[in-house]
Length: 171
Image (cartoon, rainbow, N blue to C red; front, side, top):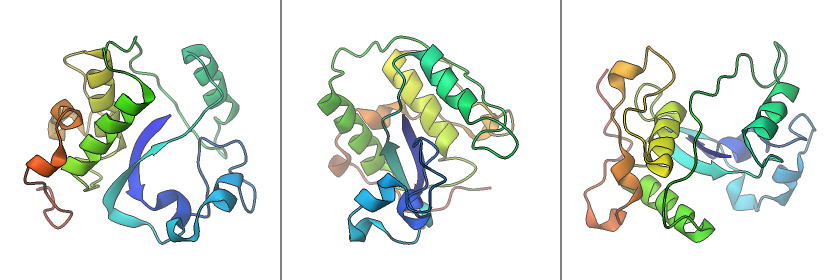
């Protein structure tokens, strides 16, 4: 599972991750494994990309994992699977994917609820990995604000002027 979220979100929330079986434990295994410098208050204006192992090898197994935690008092309320498809990237090793993710984050470290959020990242990453055009964010309210940014995965961020979290997206 790959997601974009607020910086230090897992460490700042006691190691609680929707993608780990023991999320509801007082001290989840993820939290116990974190080095001290990763346990810090979350920063809502900055983003991070998180990669988590989920016990699923395909969409059916992933759907079953999500269903296990779906309900009014659980992790997910009304899950949807908008897109699914094969990865079309020629260079798609773990190292390649890690480089794409580092490029994406290096080009823009901001997190904003309206523009640079988990839905925007999911649309960008799926469009990039699957080689699909016309992919949009899930929420109809966010669609007018979404701009495809798949190009961020490809290029070395040190070669560009990158925005800072202080440069807030217009409302």
